[in-house]
Image (cartoon, rainbow, N blue to C red; front, side):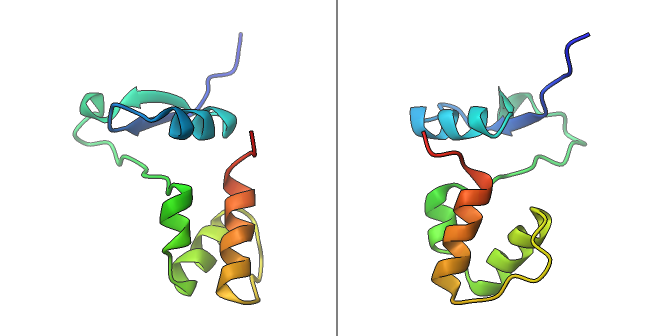
Length: 89
């Protein structure tokens, strides 16, 4: 049996760039309007979202992606997070 991809509920229409990022991260995209009411809909940040994040938020996301003790200038941390979340196509 083929393993299931994790599902992400994303508002449609999805831009080609966002679609490519999510597919590269291994997600199956479903329109957010079909999300069950009780479901917590994960909202993954886009590259633009990451560019505007404050240090604390970037550190949280990096820790969620397995970085134990993120340190350095916030711009470097944002770059690290972008590399951790998105494959360059």
